[in-house]
Length: 460
Image (cartoon, rainbow, N blue to C red):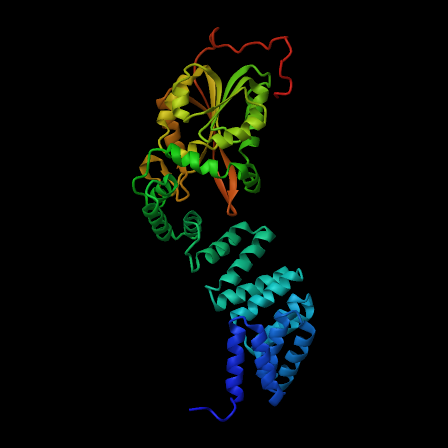
């Protein structure tokens, strides 16, 4: 049966809007204009055609149509919101603010209106007001990703890193999570205290990649099951190879204090006479090597990551760089060093006894061992050490004291320090100076500097 009557205005609007929704702007414009040819004051059509024209870059004409629709129906908050978005995109920030405020006046419980108001206020450098608007949006809809992300970024730019991390992580874990890196998802979950969810993510990751050492280690860290005595070599190597190029910059952003702390400690202990055989154990990119060089007649760096070692070599302060596991390297070099520095490396060891035993044997009489540790997790228990959800180990002073004494060290000092700031929270720990007791033997005494000029004067 052939339809004889023409389509109704409602049908024409539905057809035009369907074309608009699927991105066929030309067909949609024809439909809207056809309807307006018979009903020139149809407010919905005027508004939608205005939105379409703005999308096509004809914003001046668009604003006229939208303004006419608002004259005909002045109490529509969604239209004020659309107007605000157009004005915002045109850079008319004050007018956009007024439009969003009018939308909120008409409908206060719309999270999108508040979020849009926050965005334009932030663009106007009215950050406190933007903060308030974003929080209003989140109070209305705690799962609103755009507002969570916007508030997190605003807080981060303001330097409120701790609170920023919470909102950014909340935004990150909101669905859909498919396609997001599982390592980052796990980090976001455990940062929010959602350890069970982080565990589930890492368990799924390991099921998908059964041989992945990072997935295995982080699953153990979050679940508390099958926790290794120390991080596997493959975990350390792959983790640090992956971000070697970003390492120095990332640490600078975390207010990493360890090289400066070591420099001050060494200055209080020793004259910078380049008389010692020094080992930078876990040297990474060589940040601490720069501080150790003034004390070293020979400076050796050891690390598991070949990419980190390559960057350490670029600093031109090491006499030798060796890719090796720390305990094994120490065990293979008895009586070789006057000073061993292990900076931010024992956080990948649970039990410290094996490395302390090897370090003792690798030091000469009266040699010094300097190292940093992180505080233990709250659930460390009687052992005095434990693994944290981030995969690093922390150790308590009582355990540390017992382990040092058991392997022939005398603890000279255990100083509480701030290692770095992570997600706005200070990571606290200890800087430890220990000594192997004994008299300096003739064979082990530091050599005098040769009067012959260094054949490589640029090395230090």
